[in-house]
Image 1 (spheres, helix red, strand yellow):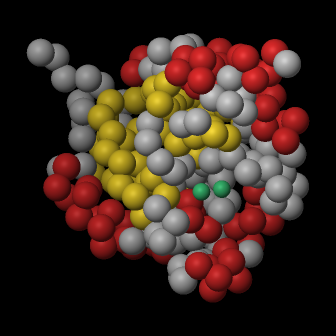
Image 2: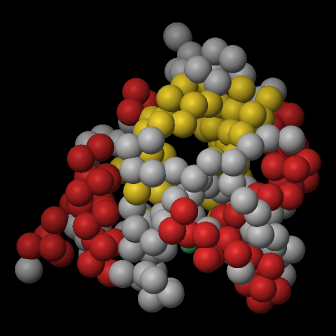
Length: 219
Ligand SMILES: [Zn+2]
Ligand SMILES: [Zn+2]
């Protein structure tokens, strides 16, 4: 059997059990950590065990559990940070204060590259699309690898739920629109890794999600 071009391993990190995902290009064995919020030794171990050379960090949004230690990781691995969208700068600026609440040594940082809707990022020989999905945070983005029918959606959508919209600059209507106009078009068969909890597919959520499923939005 031919090896798929992209492989992924989910490693829950921080006291908030955030799904950090190591994705890698099987042709080059070069990879990226998506949302390495903390637990650096465990992540290093996961990369070594998979035989992956980490070449960058990708971030979905500026919350502490997703990127509290991303700056530190970037320094230690000597790799660039790409994402999120610049509208999340105010979240990144308060990582050190927010970290104290959750027992995470949070540090502010400046990404090497802010991302916008329609941008592309590369990992080894793979190219992933970037969609801007505000609502949970204003600068939240989602990564999509169309050939693998896989999306990394952070805290936009969960299996059976959606992200919180009650944080500063959160917006419920915007969140619903991000999901229905930017995630659903990726296709029912597309699987997604949420920021917390188990994976699902967009089709399953359209059929069953009580907050954003087709039936919930029809009323
Ligand atoms: Zn979040
Ligand atoms: Zn989260």
